[in-house]
View 1 (cartoon, rainbow, N blue to C red):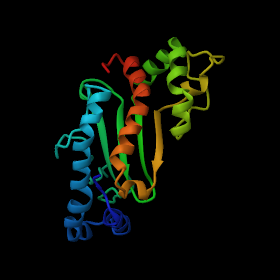
View 2: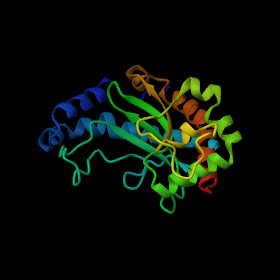
View 3: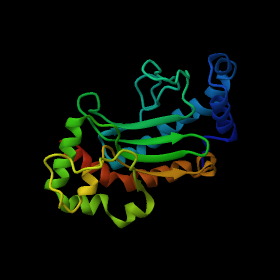
Length: 228
């Protein structure tokens, strides 16, 4: 079995969190390439065959520009935090039409003590939120079978970091899944410990997780008229 990340990967990211500045990063750029970026690109490459069996419309793309791997550089233009780098590395396994329309994605996150895998819609625009809410309202049976499946709920958590305090305008307060309508994001996720991220079963673990998350992503694709 292939091992992708190592203690050196986590050590680099911990160091970057402590020394988030260009001189330190440039002095350790080789560590970043060898222990974080290149292993992550290889993991993305190796996930594509399994992802293709889940859906022919999603991509694990190892291209260094425009691919699945997020840049390590932060866009700090509109943030009070001017740190130039992210203290984590993430990859989005995206829908082939993501540049045309809003689309859900699968996601893998590497960060010491805070790694995770998940899937769904993160920070969708208001129009996209409305479409999903209306689809849930019109298709509650399949929402229950998908988003409230015991197997899914046992393994993953529905993100509740941004939830409305009131029922969205125009939606019935007595709807069975009204609490789900209050969400701004629809993402299921679960943490992955450091031993899993640096161990030899990481790819198999992620393949199992992607398959388990697939019905939920399929539902969101249906809500947005996307192929799955």
